[in-house]
Amino acid sequence: MNKPCETRLFIDGTYVPAAKGRVTPLIDPATESSWCEVAAADADDIERAVNGAQRAFEDGWRDLAPGKRAEILFNIARLIREHQEELAQLEMRNIGKPISDARDEVGLSARIFEYYAGAVTKFFGQTIPVARGGFDFTLRQPMGVVAAITPWNFPFPIASWKVAPALAAGNCVVLKPASLSPLTALRLGGLAHEAGLPAGVLQVLAGSGGKIGDVLVQHPLVRKISFTGSTEIGAHIMQLASRDIKRVSLELGGKSPNIIFADADLDQAAASSPMSVFANCGQDCCARSRVFVERKVYDAFVEKFVEATRRLVVGDPSRPETQVGPLVSAAQRNSVEDFLVSAREANRTFACGGDRPDGKGYYLRPAVVLGCETTDRIWREEVFGPAVCVRAFDDEEQMLREVNASPYGLSGSLWTNDLKRAIRVAKRVESGVLSVNSHSSVHVEAPFGGFKQSGLGRDLGMAALEGYTELKNVYIAL
Ligand code: NAD
Image (tube, rainbow, N blue to C red):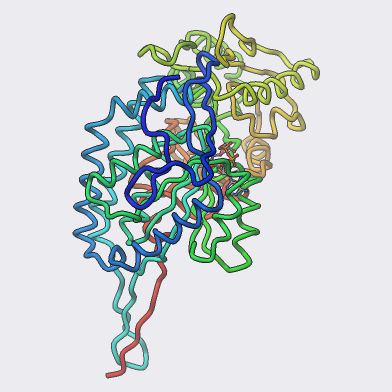
């Protein structure tokens, strides 16, 4: 088994084995072979990492001038760019992400560090003209140690969009990536230190969330938990955090709509819609997995959409032309196949896909499912894999009721050339993010997060910086 890169924990500015010497094997999803073993932290490592982070906070990170913190963040961005290919290859091998996507995501991560390096020197309080006179002003103060817990689908960008604003605001971070995808997060620890980040300011602990997550979340020195993952684990973390009124931000699951009105540019909508759900093999919290098509254009849209889906390049993630790689694990593929079985048992129509190609790797061809009822499991629940359901609608109000019947509310797309309709419908869709005549969900400069069971708080933009600070009001009698 060749060692791909650093597989040890990153604590207090150095790589160390797990205190108990435990390791987790990683499986390459494209070949199903075991290729390396990563240190698995337990409670002793958490204790060491959190205490080290608290020391680093008190020893000066919180008091460092924002401009100095910005310099270090710019350096981190530069090193990420210099190591773009290495990081992209790691991500590709670790989770089967197509290499061209992996490269883009490393570039996005560098931009995130640059954005917060620039933003923190333009982030300040207010002076407030209070009625009793005197001088009143607000301060945005760091919280202390932040636990950042991340999922396996976009490991490097999500780690970056938690770590960068938290550090920029003067916090120290204990980052716990998902046990399936720890490698780029571990590498980030070393690169950030090389960029000038003092020891302890960023600690990275690989390990099973089921085993160590509760210990980390409940640690008395952890002041905030910034979590991205499933709604189930998010709710559990919120409950644990409530005992000490810890701050939480949660980015959770989704079942996002893609709404196609008859007056839309059908060619553009149909050509771009497959990748709005099948990118990252459908393992995307923003996946547009429910398509609503106005009945007048339903047949025409479905024909173009299915044709475009069939043309997607599915296969080896190391090839630059690949658009859809394997699912992350055998368990994930089995879980997606359970949804497909339930749709087949209900006699839903598979316009394409849903089958396994021959050979090794956790592949599944993108499935377009027609004729679903709103009570179907595959229509209601997050599949987190390459499956989409398409339904026709006649009436805008009825369609909006179906859209908003989901307990989720993360993202969505809306296709129309009628400006009034675009604004009217955008206001009514219950989601934190919405895109008109496009499928983009993530902009470094804009807030990202969910309504309802899709989350609490916002990542990205200036909103994230606010979320990593406490707001203090100071009154001086004159
Ligand atoms: P998950 O909830 O299983 O795991 C997420 C993280 O939580 C991992 O690091 C895991 O180790 C950790 N964890 C598990 N149990 C824990 C516990 N008891 N305490 C603390 N941490 C614990 O999610 P996943 O399978 O890694 O990711 C898929 C889910 O993430 C999907 O539901 C997807 O929609 C969601 N997601 C949401 C967003 C968003 O921004 N809204 C982005 C990406 C993924």
